[in-house]
Image 1 (cartoon, rainbow, N blue to C red):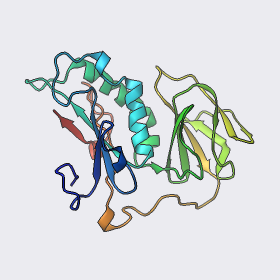
Image 2 (image 1 turned 90 degrees about the vertical axis):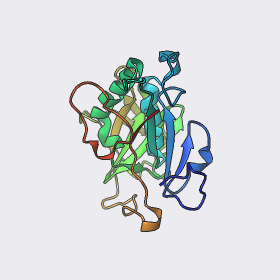
Image 3 (image 1 turned 90 degrees about the horizontal axis):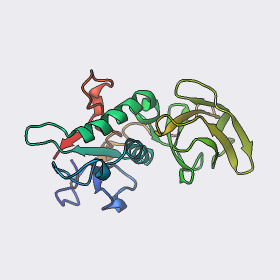
Image 4 (image 1 turned 30 degrees about the vertical axis):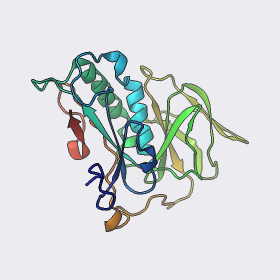
Length: 238
Protein backbone atom coordinates (compact mmCIF):
# COMPACT_ATOMS: atom_id res chain seq x y z
CA UNK A 1 0.00 0.00 0.00
CA UNK A 2 1.41 3.40 -0.96
CA UNK A 3 0.88 6.88 0.47
CA UNK A 4 -0.83 8.40 -2.57
CA UNK A 5 -4.18 8.76 -0.76
CA UNK A 6 -2.64 11.35 1.53
CA UNK A 7 -2.44 8.94 4.47
CA UNK A 8 0.81 9.71 6.29
CA UNK A 9 0.47 6.82 8.75
CA UNK A 10 -0.76 3.66 7.05
CA UNK A 11 1.46 2.78 4.09
CA UNK A 12 4.07 0.20 3.13
CA UNK A 13 6.10 2.49 0.87
CA UNK A 14 6.28 6.17 0.01
CA UNK A 15 6.07 7.61 -3.50
CA UNK A 16 7.55 10.39 -5.57
CA UNK A 17 6.18 11.46 -8.95
CA UNK A 18 8.48 12.73 -11.69
CA UNK A 19 10.53 15.33 -9.77
CA UNK A 20 7.89 16.00 -7.10
CA UNK A 21 8.25 14.71 -3.52
CA UNK A 22 11.85 13.66 -4.02
CA UNK A 23 12.30 14.07 -0.27
CA UNK A 24 10.43 10.76 0.08
CA UNK A 25 13.24 8.94 -1.73
CA UNK A 26 15.11 8.31 1.49
CA UNK A 27 15.54 5.40 3.88
CA UNK A 28 12.76 2.85 3.94
CA UNK A 29 10.60 1.63 1.08
CA UNK A 30 9.86 4.05 -1.75
CA UNK A 31 8.81 4.13 -5.39
CA UNK A 32 9.20 6.67 -8.17
CA UNK A 33 6.18 6.99 -10.43
CA UNK A 34 6.33 8.60 -13.87
CA UNK A 35 5.23 8.17 -17.46
CA UNK A 36 7.43 7.52 -20.46
CA UNK A 37 6.40 11.01 -21.54
CA UNK A 38 4.90 13.92 -19.62
CA UNK A 39 1.32 12.57 -19.70
CA UNK A 40 -0.19 9.73 -17.69
CA UNK A 41 -3.02 9.14 -20.14
CA UNK A 42 -3.05 9.08 -23.94
CA UNK A 43 -1.94 12.39 -25.43
CA UNK A 44 -2.31 12.51 -29.22
CA UNK A 45 0.06 15.48 -29.61
CA UNK A 46 2.84 13.73 -27.70
CA UNK A 47 5.67 12.37 -29.86
CA UNK A 48 9.32 11.32 -29.54
CA UNK A 49 10.30 14.83 -28.49
CA UNK A 50 8.28 14.46 -25.28
CA UNK A 51 9.36 10.92 -24.35
CA UNK A 52 12.31 9.57 -22.46
CA UNK A 53 14.86 8.23 -24.90
CA UNK A 54 15.86 4.57 -24.44
CA UNK A 55 19.16 5.67 -22.90
CA UNK A 56 17.48 8.11 -20.49
CA UNK A 57 14.95 5.47 -19.45
CA UNK A 58 17.69 2.91 -18.77
CA UNK A 59 19.58 5.53 -16.77
CA UNK A 60 16.47 6.51 -14.81
CA UNK A 61 15.67 2.89 -13.94
CA UNK A 62 19.29 2.31 -12.90
CA UNK A 63 19.36 5.47 -10.77
CA UNK A 64 16.18 4.49 -8.90
CA UNK A 65 17.33 0.91 -8.30
CA UNK A 66 20.82 2.02 -7.21
CA UNK A 67 19.21 4.11 -4.45
CA UNK A 68 16.96 1.28 -3.24
CA UNK A 69 13.69 2.29 -4.91
CA UNK A 70 11.11 0.84 -7.27
CA UNK A 71 10.13 2.32 -10.62
CA UNK A 72 6.46 2.43 -11.54
CA UNK A 73 6.46 3.30 -15.26
CA UNK A 74 3.23 4.48 -16.83
CA UNK A 75 2.14 3.97 -20.45
CA UNK A 76 -0.73 5.85 -22.11
CA UNK A 77 -2.85 3.62 -24.39
CA UNK A 78 -5.42 4.89 -26.86
CA UNK A 79 -9.17 4.38 -26.34
CA UNK A 80 -8.85 1.02 -28.13
CA UNK A 81 -6.11 -0.11 -25.74
CA UNK A 82 -3.21 0.24 -28.19
CA UNK A 83 0.04 1.63 -26.83
CA UNK A 84 1.42 4.37 -29.13
CA UNK A 85 4.24 3.08 -31.32
CA UNK A 86 6.67 5.70 -30.05
CA UNK A 87 6.22 4.37 -26.52
CA UNK A 88 6.46 0.75 -27.71
CA UNK A 89 9.79 1.57 -29.37
CA UNK A 90 11.22 2.94 -26.10
CA UNK A 91 9.94 -0.03 -24.07
CA UNK A 92 11.33 -2.49 -26.60
CA UNK A 93 14.80 -0.96 -26.34
CA UNK A 94 14.54 -1.08 -22.55
CA UNK A 95 13.66 -4.76 -22.84
CA UNK A 96 16.63 -5.37 -25.15
CA UNK A 97 18.94 -3.64 -22.66
CA UNK A 98 17.51 -5.57 -19.72
CA UNK A 99 18.06 -8.84 -21.59
CA UNK A 100 21.79 -8.19 -21.25
CA UNK A 101 21.94 -6.14 -18.04
CA UNK A 102 19.42 -7.97 -15.85
CA UNK A 103 22.16 -9.20 -13.41
CA UNK A 104 23.06 -5.58 -12.63
CA UNK A 105 19.45 -4.56 -11.95
CA UNK A 106 17.19 -7.44 -10.85
CA UNK A 107 17.51 -8.69 -7.26
CA UNK A 108 20.20 -6.12 -6.45
CA UNK A 109 20.62 -3.60 -3.64
CA UNK A 110 22.45 -0.29 -3.33
CA UNK A 111 26.19 -0.60 -2.87
CA UNK A 112 27.35 1.20 0.31
CA UNK A 113 29.06 4.52 -0.45
CA UNK A 114 32.11 3.55 1.56
CA UNK A 115 32.85 0.98 -1.16
CA UNK A 116 32.08 3.12 -4.24
CA UNK A 117 30.27 6.38 -4.90
CA UNK A 118 27.87 7.23 -7.70
CA UNK A 119 28.48 10.35 -9.75
CA UNK A 120 27.06 12.34 -12.66
CA UNK A 121 30.45 13.26 -14.20
CA UNK A 122 31.16 10.61 -15.30
CA UNK A 123 27.68 9.11 -15.00
CA UNK A 124 27.92 5.94 -12.92
CA UNK A 125 25.57 4.13 -10.55
CA UNK A 126 26.41 1.16 -8.33
CA UNK A 127 24.42 -1.91 -7.29
CA UNK A 128 25.38 -5.13 -5.55
CA UNK A 129 24.24 -8.71 -5.33
CA UNK A 130 25.90 -11.55 -3.47
CA UNK A 131 29.69 -11.15 -3.66
CA UNK A 132 29.62 -8.83 -6.67
CA UNK A 133 29.36 -5.09 -7.25
CA UNK A 134 28.03 -3.64 -10.51
CA UNK A 135 29.01 -0.31 -12.04
CA UNK A 136 26.49 0.92 -14.63
CA UNK A 137 28.15 3.65 -16.70
CA UNK A 138 27.01 5.93 -19.49
CA UNK A 139 30.38 7.03 -20.83
CA UNK A 140 32.80 5.04 -22.98
CA UNK A 141 36.56 5.21 -22.78
CA UNK A 142 38.74 5.74 -19.68
CA UNK A 143 36.69 6.72 -16.61
CA UNK A 144 38.01 7.63 -13.17
CA UNK A 145 35.76 6.13 -10.49
CA UNK A 146 35.78 6.92 -6.79
CA UNK A 147 36.05 3.50 -5.15
CA UNK A 148 37.73 1.89 -2.17
CA UNK A 149 40.33 -0.27 -3.87
CA UNK A 150 40.73 -2.38 -0.74
CA UNK A 151 37.06 -3.39 -0.92
CA UNK A 152 36.84 -4.19 -4.64
CA UNK A 153 38.99 -6.60 -6.59
CA UNK A 154 39.82 -4.14 -9.36
CA UNK A 155 41.42 -6.86 -11.46
CA UNK A 156 38.11 -8.73 -11.62
CA UNK A 157 36.32 -6.15 -13.83
CA UNK A 158 34.34 -7.84 -16.61
CA UNK A 159 31.42 -7.00 -18.87
CA UNK A 160 28.07 -8.78 -18.53
CA UNK A 161 29.33 -11.26 -21.14
CA UNK A 162 32.49 -12.01 -19.13
CA UNK A 163 35.02 -10.04 -21.19
CA UNK A 164 37.87 -8.59 -19.11
CA UNK A 165 38.05 -4.78 -18.89
CA UNK A 166 41.37 -2.93 -18.45
CA UNK A 167 41.61 -1.26 -15.02
CA UNK A 168 44.41 0.58 -13.28
CA UNK A 169 44.54 1.99 -9.78
CA UNK A 170 45.72 5.46 -8.82
CA UNK A 171 45.57 7.67 -5.75
CA UNK A 172 41.99 8.79 -6.55
CA UNK A 173 40.54 5.31 -7.01
CA UNK A 174 40.63 3.49 -10.29
CA UNK A 175 40.57 4.21 -14.00
CA UNK A 176 38.26 1.96 -15.99
CA UNK A 177 38.45 1.59 -19.78
CA UNK A 178 34.85 0.96 -20.84
CA UNK A 179 34.16 -0.52 -24.29
CA UNK A 180 32.14 1.59 -26.76
CA UNK A 181 28.50 1.85 -25.72
CA UNK A 182 26.03 -0.16 -27.80
CA UNK A 183 23.53 2.24 -29.38
CA UNK A 184 24.28 4.76 -26.65
CA UNK A 185 22.83 2.59 -23.86
CA UNK A 186 24.59 2.23 -20.48
CA UNK A 187 27.20 -0.48 -19.99
CA UNK A 188 27.37 -2.72 -16.91
CA UNK A 189 30.69 -3.77 -15.38
CA UNK A 190 30.98 -6.43 -12.67
CA UNK A 191 33.54 -6.44 -9.86
CA UNK A 192 34.15 -9.01 -7.16
CA UNK A 193 34.10 -7.75 -3.59
CA UNK A 194 37.51 -8.32 -2.01
CA UNK A 195 36.48 -9.56 1.42
CA UNK A 196 35.31 -13.20 1.45
CA UNK A 197 31.96 -13.58 3.12
CA UNK A 198 31.34 -9.81 3.16
CA UNK A 199 27.62 -9.14 3.40
CA UNK A 200 26.62 -5.61 2.47
CA UNK A 201 22.92 -6.46 2.32
CA UNK A 202 20.42 -6.88 5.17
CA UNK A 203 18.29 -9.98 5.41
CA UNK A 204 15.20 -9.82 3.21
CA UNK A 205 12.93 -8.26 4.37
CA UNK A 206 14.70 -6.31 7.15
CA UNK A 207 11.64 -6.78 9.37
CA UNK A 208 7.95 -7.27 8.85
CA UNK A 209 7.07 -3.67 9.73
CA UNK A 210 9.34 -2.21 7.03
CA UNK A 211 8.87 -4.68 4.18
CA UNK A 212 10.36 -3.25 0.98
CA UNK A 213 9.14 -3.89 -2.52
CA UNK A 214 11.93 -4.86 -4.92
CA UNK A 215 13.17 -2.72 -7.83
CA UNK A 216 11.05 -3.24 -10.93
CA UNK A 217 10.17 -1.67 -14.23
CA UNK A 218 7.56 -2.15 -16.91
CA UNK A 219 9.49 -3.67 -19.81
CA UNK A 220 9.25 -6.14 -22.63
CA UNK A 221 6.20 -4.60 -24.31
CA UNK A 222 7.28 -5.72 -27.79
CA UNK A 223 5.35 -8.10 -30.01
CA UNK A 224 7.70 -11.07 -29.59
CA UNK A 225 7.63 -13.66 -26.80
CA UNK A 226 8.34 -12.40 -23.29
CA UNK A 227 12.07 -12.23 -22.61
CA UNK A 228 11.97 -11.98 -18.84
CA UNK A 229 10.11 -13.78 -16.06
CA UNK A 230 7.14 -11.55 -15.20
CA UNK A 231 7.68 -12.04 -11.48
CA UNK A 232 8.06 -8.44 -10.48
CA UNK A 233 6.64 -6.27 -13.25
CA UNK A 234 4.59 -3.22 -12.30
CA UNK A 235 2.89 -1.40 -15.13
CA UNK A 236 0.16 1.18 -14.94
CA UNK A 237 -1.86 2.45 -17.88
CA UNK A 238 -3.26 5.93 -17.99
